[in-house]
Amino acid sequence: MKQFFLFFLIGLIGAFVYFSTHNQQIALPIIQSLRPKTQFSIEQAPKDSLKATIKELTGMVSWESRTAIAPSILKKDVLIQQGENLLTENDGKVTLQYADQAEVYISPKTAVAIIQTLPANFVFSQASGSAEYKKMGKIPVSVRSYHLIVLIDGDSTVSVDNATGIITVDVKKGTAKVGFNDLDYVSQVKDLKEGEKWEYDDTAREIKQVK
Picture 1 (tube, rainbow, N blue to C red):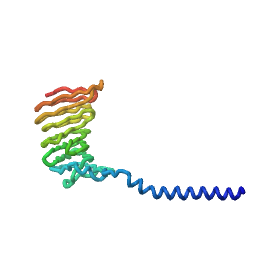
Picture 2: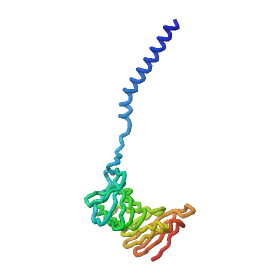
Picture 3: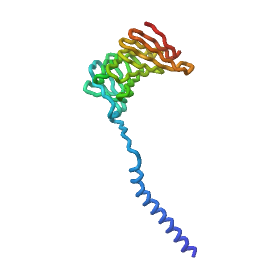
């Protein structure tokens, strides 16, 4: 009797394992079909994002694409996508052209990341050096550097001094608006006019006009 029960129990366990595995195999395609499909692609930027053509290129400029594990030398026929990085060397200069919407001139020894180039907003991150940003169309253009955000409406140059933590905003044409949180975490917003030059101290979280 005990032997019969043992065989019965083994058979029952085997049947349970079989049907459980079989049902999982049937259910798996159903579950996968119910999962939402994502349009995200590492290789390609969002379909609506604008790509920049290279208007001018001189000297050595390093380019880090969306899929790169290391930077490569930038060539003039490359289209610059959202999510890519550029670093100009001592003699490197490059000008990016976003159709009739914006133009970015990157000076030597400057690091710029292209964060977003969607029709709703262009966002750049500048870690060092100097770059000139021109807003020519309706798409807002903003630059992030350290804890400072600069919204450009016209033509402004942003210069970053990593040794001092000073960021200079030179409004060549039009206006600009800067925003940051001070050391007390209070939001500060300042409107900059054409012809003005302002210096933001990231250590002190203060801004002052120098021109």
